[in-house]
Length: 292
Figure 1: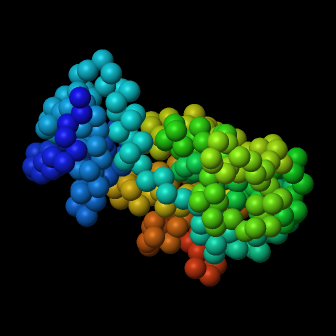
Figure 2 (figure 1 turned 90 degrees about the vertical axis):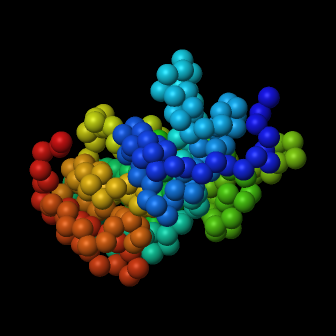
């Protein structure tokens, strides 16, 4: 029997805050600032009610000691990760990629035999499929030379990304012409669904990745990396480590796209800022230090 949903969420003590901040940061790298503690408390309380646990300490012990603790941690993490996204979310970045970056990469001999892109924190796949549509539309590179990888920490979002199926509200930002060309519309019960066509599936793949993990198990070099609206959830120290590791996986001459809200005034070894209107972009100009 679940706890009464009308029972008010208990306040988090300073000890509760420190305990949960530490656990979440150690396991996922996510850092909750004071301004986001309410969100953290809400997500904890939602899971606590599922298990009839009335205190944050009891829930902590459940995750740490119960035989189902790992499964519960995965469920909690799903709620802590902000998966809000949409197709072509940051238009200035896509404009820079379409109008400037792709033509420049085509002129570089090493990119003409294949173009590798990586969407970090891809959520349910909207960014990956947006990149795929843009590349197919611009036709700078032939489809057989394009490979786009999406990675995320959320198992449920990766499953949706692999399925490539979306409800009508999830494709609200997708241009009508793209929807007709790259989506198959069908009815499932009372739901109107849209599924990506094979032309997008053939050039995309999805993988699980915890950015905080000691090893990333990927040595692929990428010509373009999109890491937008992801770094804002990490501490400054973790953010810099992630960026350094991302830069190591970018080919010389390749590009890193960040969200303007993610990072301000960071100097990245081997990278130089490139000006595009309303976009935050770096280009790799030299090899970075050896991976940590």
